[in-house]
Amino acid sequence: MESILHGIILAFGLILPLGVQNVFIFSQGATQPKITRALPAAITAGFCDTLLILLAVFGVSVIVLQFEWLRLALMIVGILFLLYMGYAIWKSELAMAETDKALPVRQQIIFALSVSLLNPHAILDTVGVIGTSALKYTGLEQMLFTIACILVSWIWFFGLTAAGRMMKELDGKGRLMNAFNKCSALFIWGTAIYLMIGLT
Image (cartoon, rainbow, N blue to C red):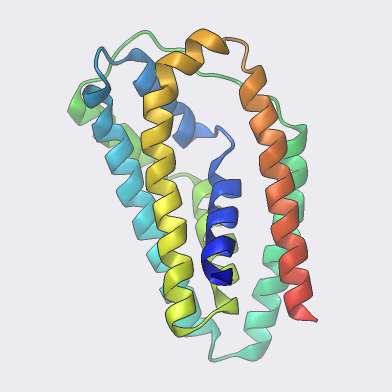
């Protein structure tokens, strides 16, 4: 249960701010004529996040678990990154992307791939934070942690797509999403403290 809750809180805290990837998924939900027309972008983003999480957790773990000093170093770097990221998110203001054109399926998939796999911020999140956080667990606990992170990504992307049009109408100035950013920063700082306690 601890590993599942840790995975949910960490993944939710990392995915909540509307970065490039999330703004694109959100905008497709807001601009497509039907919700089903926006699903290719959400599904592509979900698969990309799944791939990055699996590579981060199992790839990083296999290498790092052989060297205790490397594991400790990565945990410290991960904690520092979380503290900085929480500060950056807390100070950030939402800049919503406006687009009036509904993209066709092929362009949705290509753009979702680019903002997911070529986004340094997303790679740092998964490898630098989720990957190093997974080092706290082994065996079944690590698997449950990984599944929890993946499920949060999929649920978030579908939810973000469904909420696109409604959120755009009700929150045109982005005030509600800015409040979500504050909550996300608190989640991330809490995770950093949790990892610090694990080092002692």
